[in-house]
Length: 172
Image 1 (cartoon, one colour):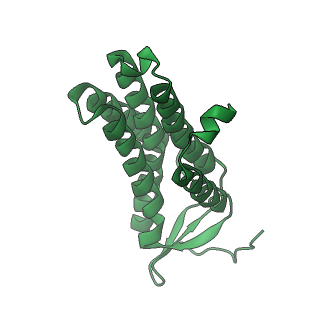
Image 2: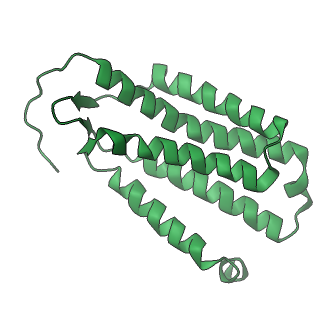
């Protein structure tokens, strides 16, 4: 394990810390400007898509697997597990987003999936070059990204709902 860590470029540790901090921030309930509320879903989808590009290139099978995972989880997540408590204040252009540990878990899953695959490539593991691995890993990236698409869909739905009066929020 020390050999793996010692050969990891410093920017990977910086990215990990930044993603960890951003994920921990998601655990707190907060008011967020509308444009910033969409940054996390867009960024995580871009990160997972970049994982496919850097690992396999934009080939049809990995891209299709990614898209299937993304759409499936986005639809299931939005319909079965809507992000409750999200509200939009059009006067301020802000969303109220309740805190959750789920975004942190999904962010870390994307990061560690990409990291584990890079380690496999670094050690020259034959499975890392397998088309089955490309499709499976792309499907995983797509499923993880689907969570963030479902979350963005909940933001859009909250922005379209008629404004409701809320009791004053108490920050914890």
